[in-house]
Image 1 (cartoon, rainbow, N blue to C red):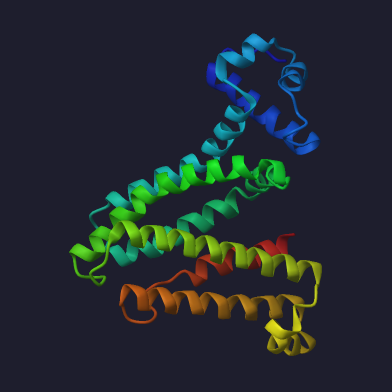
Image 2: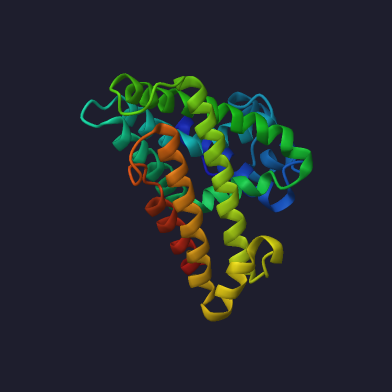
Length: 249
């Protein structure tokens, strides 16, 4: 291993090497010996920075999310924006981050494909969700206090919104993978879209389905917050990410 005088550079080298091995061999089959042997260092060097292999993947995930958490925290504290403006920027920040860090995101996600790692994935996601909730709850509290939103419990609304967006993210991912794999959607659930797909390109069909889904979520959230339709805007952020991802694949 090339000598790295800066402890942060050395630690980052451990994280990069570990992530590469986790993707190549699988998280559960990669050992600490594999990591240290690949880097040409002792186990003592590893334990100087990490307490375990699980600690490594947690820190990889933390590093990935750090910028996003910092920016959303700064957003929540801004005094020049309304709560609605902050909510809409919140969606944009998240999707922009996922797009700009797509390779890293895919590498981390790949680690949790094995069912043995689901417990670890839940632990990491719950940790990220709790940190993100601090900013989101502050924004919702502002909206309630300034009467932009209806009276509601900000903590419960934050949890509801986070799990709703998690569901939207999963649904968008499913649509994307169906589109690139050119899979025929289930007839009972998607008869209308099957007809569209016969006349449109794969991109057009994917976009039509995605737009309808995002319109539904925008309308649903507007009704929950009791703001005028069109006030909550997440569609452009998702379209920008997914349509570009479709074209750049």
